Length: 336
View 1 (spheres, rainbow, N blue to C red):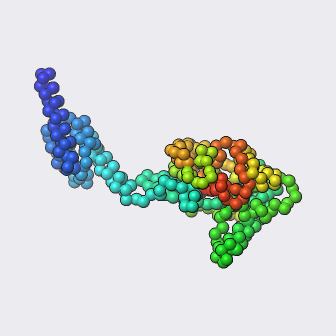
View 2: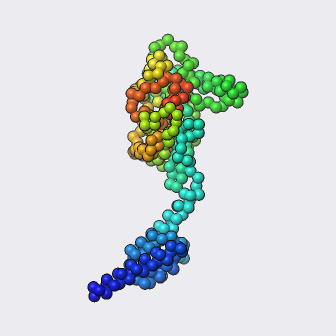
């Protein structure tokens, strides 16, 4: 009896191996599965054959009914359905163009929203930086500060005028996005210290995510003059201001500090940073997602120093150059 069972097992294995070899040039079909079933191959052997070979199954309603009538088990049919689903997903992924895993144009960082079978590039937005006398106690309090509202508006006008002057045409005034529109405009104030506020000049994001636990791919590698190991991606909550701006963060500093080369602007930075899960995939490349579900609202992907005491040059922040390229960049998104 033992010899008979052993012989049967060897026959099953050899038959399954024959199926695998035969199917190297021809995809496994419904007829092949029915044939294996009628020859009493174990269910596990049939499923392994399905997983090991190219397949071309008919998993329509009529196809599944025919399989059931032929005695094919539910587990085998489930394996056939899974094989067809994986085949469709692979084809869809190959047909869907995705953003390249590289930094943005002209040495800019880039962020992609990771979806099931594709990547959606998020628009890079640049913050304006404005001054106010108000204390940086919270972004909510700053959002109602009238002086900040006025300073931000002045920043827009100055950035627009600068763009028009450099382009020789007022058409350049529409390209308002460079940080530091107000950094030079209000430096004449006599008070020795100010609150510097980073804000986006738009009321809402152009991207609304379908999940409250979205995942993002961030690439900030290969940007000249920047050590990517000194920065990491994060998610912050954006606070809407009364003038339809969205506040990103703020910090207090003396005027000469903000204009110098050793500005520890992030050591006491005020922002609504969300708990995240970060996975570093390469230097300057990472995946980031919230640790828990995000409440409805406006959010942004930002790049922040790993060491909070890191020193910046005020000119880099004000002129959106060097490390200011990273710190001033935001990729906003909305959660329903």
